[in-house]
Amino acid sequence: MSEIIVGGKYKVLKDRYYSETDEWILVKENIAIVGITDYAQKKLRDIVGVELPEIDKEVKANDPVAVVESVKAAADIYSPLSGKVIETNQKLTESPELINKDPYGEGWIFKLEISDRNEIEKLLSPEKYSELIKQREGL
Image (cartoon, rainbow, N blue to C red; front, side, top):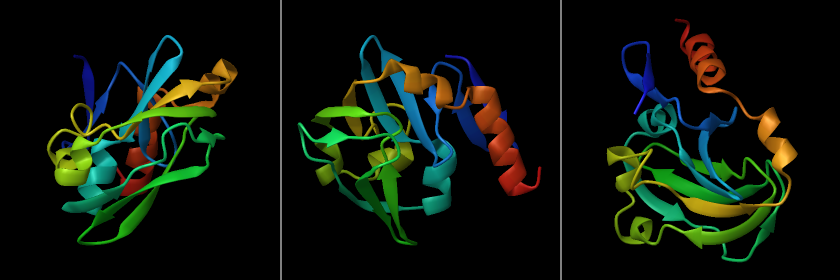
């Protein structure tokens, strides 16, 4: 899998989209798989809890839908696209640290049935998200 390493420590995968609020989005046909980025999980540090969204919940782009709790802070997770939550990663209720261990894989948070594919165009490319991290970190 192709990736960009930003500042020598933050991994950005090239096969997905990103939001300015540090969610990644992997689009497969009409389904979006959503999680938080490597950058976000490293900033939060040790994740100790996750409040998952409700199944069948209709959400709009940028709505807060979940919460990730770490030893450092609690962070809202926003839906990057409008649609309906169709699945959540139940493994995270028992093992929230999966977000730290594998943010782009086993640490996914929810799946969304996309209602407006045009919103995908508003998301960030891997390159643009990498630039955003560089700006934040002064790189």
